[in-house]
Image (cartoon, rainbow, N blue to C red):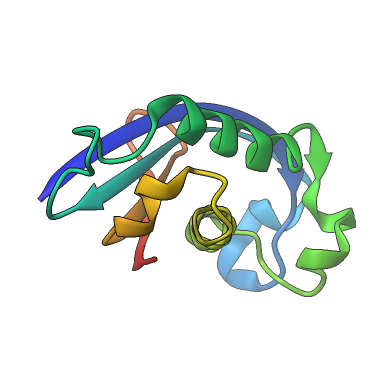
Length: 132
């Protein structure tokens, strides 16, 4: 399996609901380093997994929609705990939609899967991987 990774970051504010989260129930900030890894069994006719420039542009655009936002105020996240794992899935879904829409180029139609990893720090991260 071949893979290609692009990386970016974004900063958000949010709070969590439920005693499980202790002090994180209060509004707090997070800065995530995001890795989007694209996988496929065979390279496309250009010898690529996916166009790296387009992949970086799509990731940057998706993160820009959340960057410097209080996610508690975003209607799309109403009633949800925007945990690292939840956000990894949300970003995956947005990238997968972009791939299906052709935003990553025709070669991206051969992708087997995409894995999105949100790094909270050098010690902790969460991921979501799914088929395209």
